[in-house]
Image 1 (cartoon, rainbow, N blue to C red):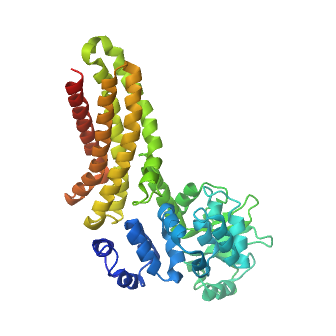
Image 2 (image 1 turned 180 degrees about the horizontal axis):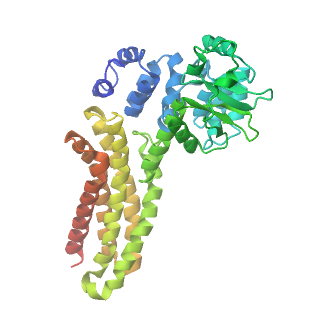
Image 3 (image 1 turned 90 degrees about the vertical axis):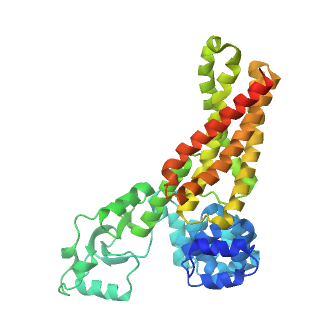
Length: 445
């Protein structure tokens, strides 16, 4: 990409995506597919659609493959039906496996029809495995020779074509069962009449198609080989799992775990619709509410000691906890965006507005729920009003802090991934307690 990602975001968003969008598209022509995908994910939906429309159709398929599913589905839904024949031209099984969960059934059928006979067979075989098994993700581009092949056969095969991330020739018997592997470096310089089996690597690990994809990927990363053979239960060679695919699956798994700590999906779009973002996060807020009320119940055991302020003391953890989880969700999304260079001063305002709207939606919903519960629990309507207002204010403050804090920490050269959650918890606790106890002092005492 000719310009760094933050500069392109500035250029598109600052000009409202209208003046120079064609010029930006022309700049992107030499860029890598993953760079274009990252740029599209970094833009508010309106600017994203403008850039997508002017991208050449021949680039769109590869860009979609590199995108997360949420922003990808937005683009797929907005693409006219008559464009898809051109976009899907040249699709292969690996591309379709990546896209299949995002494509509506009509487009999936069209994509399958666009596969050639061999690629369709690969696709059908891969879909026999669920996506958590490595057999779903294998590559069929590999160097394979019969067990009785000689060095001259290996050299001829290498001259014809060597796939990316391939450092070995796989040897199979007449039934297609994997027998051994030969490093390419061992073939060069060896006598041409020598059987390849005499140069085989005894220590190469083998992966089964039913193995967990993350476990198999870690095995590839640690093996010292560019790719490992994948076999079925009968030892028949299915394909290979290379270091690039392995690294992508490991990274996706790590990102999934990080996002899951805040109850979020790693595929969530930075600029997903407010209703969708609120819905995705509401469940975790509800689960957190149950644990918060459990803590409140334990505090309630000391009711006799706390006397007049017992209700406030019992409900204080609810206020702090709801703000904490809401802020953590926003913080996690922003930290990921900062790590990928997707957030700049140009799109920060739009992102903050979106997060405040999400906080407002969830704030209203859960403030009402908690207010009603508090009223029924203590038979005090004013107490219900106090906690309702406090929850709403704290969730809004958490959304604001979740956006602003990591940006400030990054400018101060402090890692927001390490320290952001600690500071955020402090902020939400202080705001929650001050709002709750302050309102309680006004209305209840």
